[in-house]
Image (cartoon, rainbow, N blue to C red; front, side, top):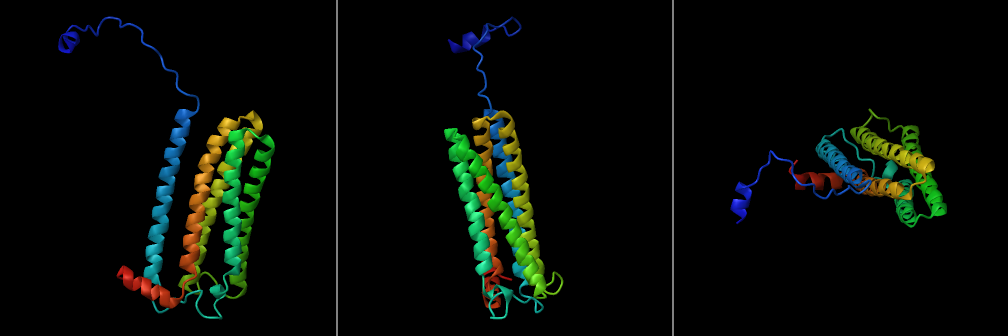
Length: 226
């Protein structure tokens, strides 16, 4: 019967009206935002992965001097880097708080959470810049050692990614200040939360990578076939 029904159709004649399903407001844009974020994170991950491969290969040259391992190396004491990690972790935690507050439409908590996220993120960038200044004061310039160059490169790219995230967060804050739309703010903060979590994981990986000793680099290079 279904075959005869299809053959009997007259598509050139006006068809009966069907039910129109209105799209859910913000659903399409939210899906597009998640897709764009996933694509961006994938691209950034590939960039950091390729830089890591070149870094591990460069560690096997005789002019490479690791920044940790020996007592006189600057990262033999990693207390400042641990402090930076704690600051970035606080930024990620307060951003999660902002997501919950926006879901509950608690304007007071939203304001405090957004301020805290921006503050901790800016403090992390300032703390990273302070490490740069400390290295320069000790004579660890960009061109004096390949390990120095990679440290500035890795942390600089990571800082630029965080700065871009702050711009996206600022856009969410401005939109919320104008429209006071908690639902729209929540969608934006969910994306920011995932991005901050990604940046935290990248930073922890870089922290581990850049504070290894020369012997550790040789062992990793052997395992990777360099």
